[in-house]
Image 1 (tube, one colour):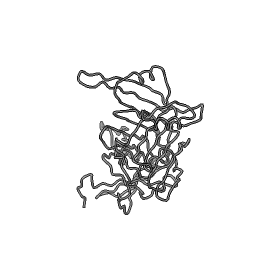
Image 2 (cartoon, rainbow, N blue to C red):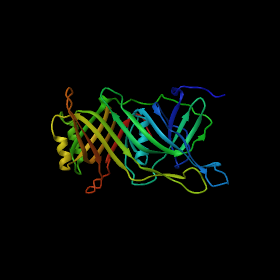
Image 3 (cartoon, rainbow, N blue to C red):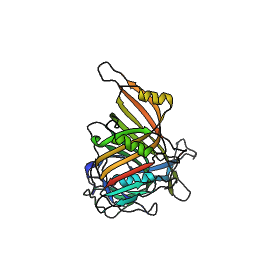
Image 4 (tube, rainbow, N blue to C red):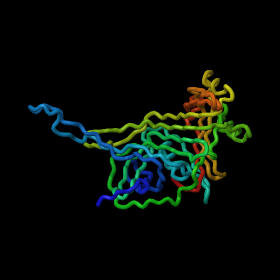
Length: 329
């Protein structure tokens, strides 16, 4: 018998596939806030003439896949698997026996690591294999929990016998107070320069909001003989963001006008052994816009785009490090 249920009764989990496209049970369950991921279908109409003025007489399923978004608070453990999917491979892990450092290297490939997405409701127990992260967004606002939005594509769902959602190993949750934003000279020594800014009492830039985006630009690889994609490939890799802060000088306007490059660090720090660090060796300041209203403090926004550092052979995200108490991804 069908069961009515509220969304809070729906569990969503992720697991690392090996090889790609082989459905696996989830290793992490995500406490989601909004959910739009589900099965999709393309159907075409038979529109040929049959001696009648009717516009169609039948329809056919020609494609079936999974697609949608999951928005959730960022917990330090499950996000490690999302980062692996974005980077394209599992991280190199050091440390132990209780504190671990996971270092991710961006893979210059078009068939990145895939995930199985699990969905468990009172009416449905299924796995979506070949899950790929299309777009990933981190949003930070004052006095709030840090959110991430994950856009996925996958093959169509498969029924699964039993799923047991568990939320006992989520780890810590990132809050806005844990976030810091730094800029430094763009050079081969950008990590050292960013370390210097982080250590400086004046190095942290006081931002009021931050958005950070990674885009894998996915495409389905459709072939004859099946209605579901046989592969899902990532194409160009893009990283960008937007920052809002007080309009107290013309520094960022001048960066945009002059075409200045800077190295950039976004870091979430809960403690010595609990952090997420995203370092970009070369960011371009794309747009600048002030906001000046009669009764409000004037603010400014700028957008940035991470670039490949050709001179030093460094990817858009040259240093991506997660520290937590989860041993492996």
